[in-house]
Length: 438
Image (cartoon, rainbow, N blue to C red; front, top):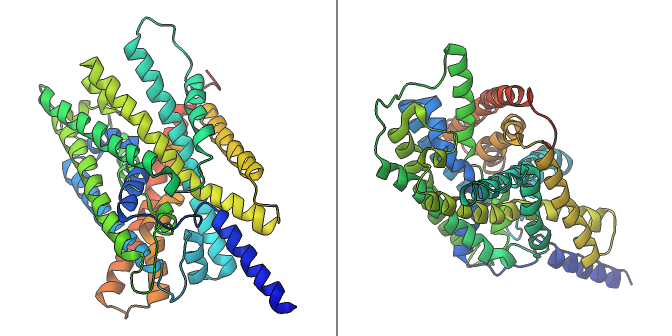
């Protein structure tokens, strides 16, 4: 009788895992990893990178961008390696890896709050970004039309997600993720190619943006965070790898790493030309969205904004699926609710409604994410993988691996301290004249 109960328990556990979004499908190809990672990492914030460069200047700006690209590629490699570091087990979720390193309870409390801040916060930002891009399209296509509040555009953007949120897992949204990845490369190319075609503006000024030393310092901190966190896609990397099939002979890290390499090439092709060409052409006069500097031709700017909308639709879902997985796991495994379509319908609609409401209430949420995200994006992307690597792999003290990991931990901690300072100042300045739902 106990054997039958154990067998039934194992079967029930497997049925639940097959129902959950992260472990529900494990037949992904290596190229799925490429466009999932591109969609997760490249955000519409790429269009503000020239503006960040104007606060950093040529030397620090180029250095921060290259260092961020290299460090995050290294920490992402660590996570791919650690996915199956324990024989016979896969760490399908970030918090599972954290629990293995820090202990069941402590690992959960270290990883889950930070991962939720990043995933939910990013989705709120994408709600606002999608709404603003739709608003810009309407203004360009029909300048004489009656202006509509940003609130309504956010609701229009959210309506898409009330449908797409019910796709069961990562593999079921592979086509959407591919379209989003293509769009990110497309609008990035439009931004830098059109800037280059426009030519360097007269009397271009490459000095650091700001009216005084204090202003320049705060702008520098804010820009430092903007550039460093534009490479943050680690919160979903283990969840993406969980969808790739794995055997002892052919572990998932092979195809996953191949996909990551291609993804990082695409990321470099999106980020570096936009940031450096945009700053080279416009200097200190660059706007916080480089498309505003271009202005004309109108059809090109409209096209770029359409691409942005399509991209953030895919990005929203990439960051939402791990949240769906956490919520559904809690409800089914801890609260012992039945894994039904009704449960999934209710929880996912509530999540979309929640992110929509926060986005409508605080359209300056990007500043909030810069502040709170500094405490979550820096650890989960820059130094938490290094700490976990040191705990699990135990490299020899003062070896190259030990030194590199500690160096990146120090850099990550500095980012966590400095970047929120600029975000806090942005919140204070923006909220002074803000009124809800205006």
